[in-house]
Amino acid sequence: MIKIAIDAMGGDYAPKEQVEGSMKAVKMIDDIELTLYGDETEIRKYLTDETRIHIVQSDGVISMGEKDPIGAIRGNRKSSMALALSSVRENENDAVVSSGATQALIAGAHILVGRMKQMKRTAIAPLIPNVKGTSTIILDAGGNLEIKPEFMVQQAYFATVYSKEVLGVENPRIGLLNIGTEPGKGRELDKEVSLLFEANDKINFVGNVEPKDILDPPCDILISDGFTMNIAMKTIEGTAKGMGKILKTELKKGILGKLGMLLSARNLKNFKYRMASDEIGGAMIYGLRGVVVKAQGSSKSNGFYNGIRQAATIVRNDVVNKVQAILESEVL
Image (cartoon, one colour):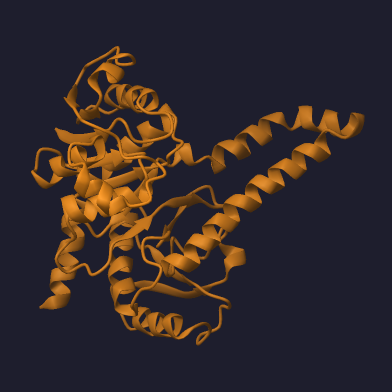
């Protein structure tokens, strides 16, 4: 049985959506057992089915707007997030799923779960939909604003294993986000990373990828430093929302526009569904000794369920140990 810790108090809509997502998860996934960390009184307001669900009382919640995430984790080891993370370190659970504050979760994961010995930097790696109807792994999404080229090689190893074992991609292709596709483009960091990727037979490197191709990439994994990738991701998110508003405004103009909106309602709904973060689940924090999945702070029950499903798949396919084996072979 896969045991997963749930930070039931982290997120914009906690604990309601976390509890409802957890109940859906045990109904849909046969080999999981969940422990919800949080205010038991609040949790029980929404918990109508305790099948394979346990509750551990916590004391306090780390705020979504926490300005000192390290201090918050160290100063409140009884919070729902800290208790959930500590349970993985103590081998009480195999994974953690949280919608809590991102920086607090990353800090807490470093302190309470710990980084893999050979992994020099962790990375947060969400999935984004692409035009082919599948998902692209994006990293680093903001965990490391500055990074050394050799550390990005380790992150590429992790992403490759994840893509194979969780997404079912047979030979994952890796692209480097850059200002041009030609070899030798970009900063010194980009040039060094490109050379390291090309020389590494464990990495299926397809070359540089321009930002305009992020939603239609020639790769399964797209990598850059955290600063660059975070800007790129937020640009895509803002553009998608803006284009949606423009389209909605235009379709409301005149009789023909309203008729077009009525006729295309199903297509617009399908578009919204494909772009919804709830359908993806969350972002795994790469490089830890245990499995930690960051679900969206605004996750509703279905999004949180998908985060749990994702965590279970990662554990079931032994992703962490398979990455560890690759890292250890590099040392030998």
